[in-house]
Length: 185
Image (tube, rainbow, N blue to C red):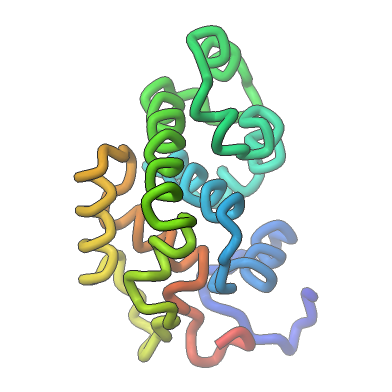
């Protein structure tokens, strides 16, 4: 949908089909599927210190390397699997982030068991409501991301700082930060 008359958020690189597709079809769309919620949580953690386009370009390789983000499988990764991931040139090879993904999978499962689903946990912070952008000055965090980040850290998750969590909330549609002139607003 790269039509010239379509207005999109300023951050979208109009020369990148992958970015346009992500913006138009995923970013800010409410996500309720635990598998998708887990995938985005892991990808947001891997994005720390990098650009989102880097992660988008490697997304299919991440899916393959991380067993299609099956949370139970990821939670059981051992040293052999960690070595395999560290040698996979198609993903971000950062041992701390890989270990965090495994750790976070275990905690994700605990949250599912406690709340019935991760969806019920994460959407419970807003009582199922979407927070809509009221101006085009997109913050990097807010009170909601601060609260969720603190809770996830207390549960033992890693790479879930408030800025990462704010981006996560945008990506899964809890926060709709599309600019007012964007067709997705």
